[in-house]
Image 1 (cartoon, rainbow, N blue to C red):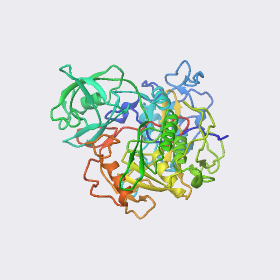
Image 2: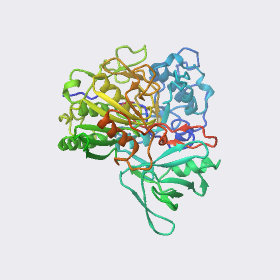
Image 3: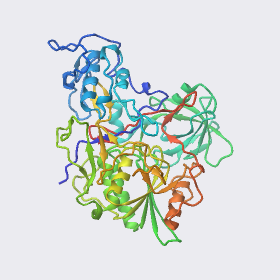
Image 4: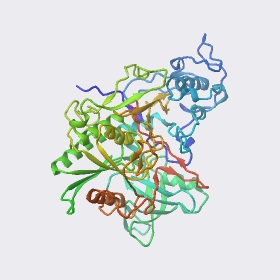
Length: 540
């Protein structure tokens, strides 16, 4: 019997899709402006002393606004009445205990903050990677209730589609990257005529505000990323392939993501090979049975090659990444090999401090987990492929990068087609305190060959001189074709590479490098929305 760990997250899921990260929650645990200078635990000295840390458990669940009722598992919340200083002290001690770069955190007096989210934002490293990126770009929070709904069922508030921001600076450009169901979104325009919204549909105005040039980014963001169900916003949109625009009203609702889409194959006349294609967008719990079905189908078709489209997959449950990697490679290269070895900070060399279990490598899981939609310990199917083509982009992150890294670590040939991935060899357990899920980098992962230094991403046809260089082709995102269309730029390049071993005439500049899930700003500075894949299960 395989033992599946408490699922750590691979940093990266979608929180609130709005212009500023501060919009993703209140003051930590339900708000309030309380800013006491002493904690309520009589007999415990909680006055701030730089470098002196009480155990985080001293302050856990001591909340400005305690919750009543039960949690997602049906257990009563353990919250008791506390203070803002209690919540801040928990953040300070928790970060010192668990943060991967804890010795790079500036120890700031928690009593100086009357908002716990503002304080949490300071409890991280501000160092840069060799390319000048922030080393920690994955520090975020999500309201616990929202997090539970998203990670377990893929349910979130939206329109049933995901936007791609092709250009963040005026003239801005935003298009539909994909629909959550995989099918066209059927709406009615202002003249009562039916309209199908698909990938490539371009947004021109939001609630009457010009997307390309207006400085009213608050209206743009509020319309594109609604905060609540039943919100209605007006969009002027030019559908894919159309000359004229239409005006439609979109209504926000609780939508469920379909994480696995467009499972199909192409018989290639040039090579005589059957090429499978699989679009995988979310490492959420419901992905496991869908991936099993997809691999069974690809196996029944007898595919010789696989194109795995991860361009929009920002990560999630690591065990699902391990399962998928096994289902691609099979027993021969993976038997006895680690999928990933997790490394914590130097305070925890041998034991996972969250689960209190010995640090053991995560294996390539060969059986079902028994989580959502599956019976435990059933054998997983496998394609037994020595090579996989991965379509990538800047949203290819965390658990998705672990698939790339782990397969390369056991000798599977990974050909990367697209753009440089996001660069997140790190993960965490989502930690709930007082109604907020806190995500702070806790560990890094390395593959079977000991490699995990891809903080600036995996680079197709790269020239960095490191193992982050992956052979393949740089090709931008092609919003003129639907996903799964053989003529779509990245898929077409993968097919051409299968035929010839070369990249062909397409290039990174041929199409857009637009990122999914960012929000708009007046000056064009990118304000990324946080990624939401995680829970008390290892996430990356």
